[in-house]
Amino acid sequence: MKKYFFISGLPRAGNTLLSTLLNQNPDIIVSGQSIVPEIFFRIEEIKKTQWFENFPNEKSLENVSKNILNNYYKNQKAKYIGDRGPWCSEYNFSMLKKYLNYEFKIIVLVRDIKEILSSFIKLAKENENFFVNKIYNKRIVTDCWRDEIEEKCNILMEKNGFIDTSLAGIKHLINNVDGKYYQFFEYDDLIRSPINFLKHIYNFIELPMYKNHKFTELEQFSMNNLRYNDLVFGAPLHTIKTKKIFKQKSKNILPDKLIKRYSDMEFWRTR
Image (cartoon, rainbow, N blue to C red; front, side, top):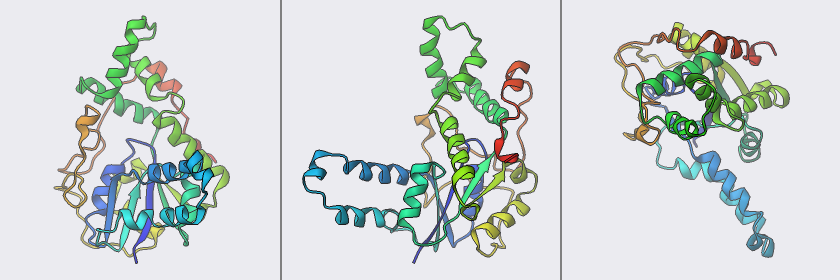
């Protein structure tokens, strides 16, 4: 029987790199950005419809939800499945608690907020069709008074945007969830010492360390030959450096006032 663990946390925090490394282990398969949380949500939403209220076959719908993960990954031969998605949120976490009958683990990847923003701004500078640029170009018509980088950071940090909801999910874990279910892993630790980082990952998900991991001449992320189509977002969001693992320098991409604004936001370090 397959066993599941989960990868969540902040964007631009090493998700794709970690997934690529773990997929070197033949006993593990890690997904790309998963739609499984959305499947859970849409099935639960059915309960709010008139058709369901008219004939509330609760048990049959529960049977569907109980088997979502197993059916979704039915064709995967690996013993352990890592599903990458927004599992830290209150709703998504409750679905795991409801439908998994064991103490599952959530790997929560985190990184300095100002570095995350710098990474996105760098993508925006290098890729004209990046989704952030498209949103910004629509707003500029309204004579926005902020400079371009500041406004793009505002777009990225908007309420209910993906960074905001990721932070809210992390806050939810800290305030409401037993620490046995999750652990924070810092992006800098992954870049600085990927071997030790993986040792901590394996220890947390309670699996023996795979001995043949390689950290140079990497392949781009894939799951059974399926790869990301980043044309959807207009930039190589999930492309990793393959020659070796190192931290890209993004010095001076954010002006000083924005560095100051987005510094010391890493509340998970001071909880």
